[in-house]
Image 1 (cartoon, rainbow over the protein chains, first blue to last red):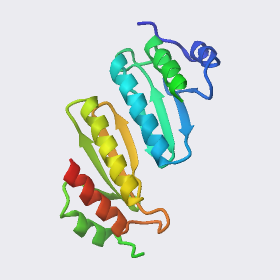
Image 2 (cartoon, rainbow over the protein chains, first blue to last red):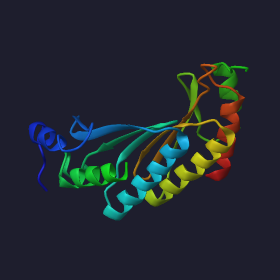
Image 3 (cartoon, helix red, strand yellow):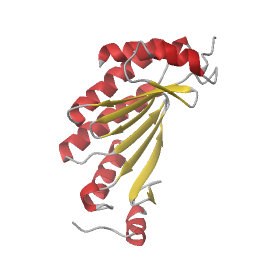
Length: 92
Length: 92
């Protein structure tokens, strides 16, 4: 499994909106109109993650959802993370 | 709205399982068999929170869910938090 270094990861992130490379993972903060919409997003991301068998780290407070992706087995960012990030972007 | 100090909060928490008082909030770490069950729990807690119009801070990674409750308006722990904590315990 290829691990992307910071420079390569950042150049790949340029294709996505508002994702940042942080501590060997990629992260984005999402903001919604209310909790209801944030919860719906969490469920959609969860189902997506289950389908891909690759799960995010997720933080929620009211209308805000932060998602962090990294590949634990590889201890870094891999195609699995970019693949899931792209799929999450399509949902959002 | 009455704010509970640490001592009072901790004595009330004795009625609940594994909740701790931390930084003017009450917290518990839940662990599930897998992500699927963790997500189901998140959805149930979310619907409960929406009904009670009192929302938790929530952190999830795979089969683990951490919940933190505090009352922002009161800048501390109030009955709203204990009420929600009890309802979450019933779910779990």
